[in-house]
Image (cartoon, helix red, strand yellow):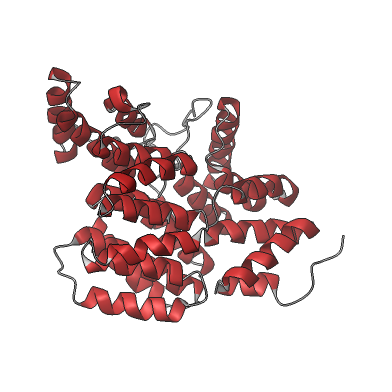
Length: 393
């Protein structure tokens, strides 16, 4: 869902970009091997960025020039999977980055950047300031609702969603509500209401269509509904290349035991840690020799992130240790630390997997308590956790 924050930020306010830097260069053994696909300098995106950079450079103190540049960098971070673009977005807002009384436009952009590094409380604080100034600011309400949903603060998030019906196109409010209902025991109703809303949505609204179809795919995935693939493909047709969507679709394919399709989907996405992780999982399932190199690269990237003190990618780190390192005991601390920050279905799943594998009473108790409180409907978790008692050590 965090990808949805960036999505709505680029449209009316999107996956959280999970990217790391390799600690050491990888030396290919084949001269014909493609190491990386770089964004072309002749693309529309590149030309747009250059034009906005030039405009902002002429008057860096003018927010009307800096804000479009920051927003373009945020969009680029989503499509390219490169965290440096978020740094560039922060730099574009340099004059307003630490100003608690920054203009509304700067606060919304700043909140969008802050959430990307899991500074959720700081992001919500900025959005609160916006709402105090402008109670009908749809951007702030939608972005705050999405961040609060990621944190598992559903009651607070639902209030923002309900307010959106009077402030924004109905489809965004419907998606906002469906995202919460789908993880609080009302997944069938959420699925039906959102699917119905999308049938009347103009095909020209690609952002809402992609976001809505992605959410439908995730709901269907958790409900073990094969319609998930149809929704993910519809979202891809609407969104083009989208890192969050690629990850969600790959997860469904992995659960369907279709690793060859994951390889085909992600073989050119090795720059993005979250996608390389899924590619490595597929390669391992297929017993491909490339799996070893992918695992080695991921290990180096995670080691480098630890050296930097980066704690953003703990979910991916936990999943790496659990499924690729074959070390549930190493996975558990990452899963537990991650759970303190974000509480999406993928977060509770890796925590449950690690807790069950290590027979960890406290971790398993957290999982059972969350499922009881939220009534989350997730087929894979139901099978994993069952209805038994907390396992004894």
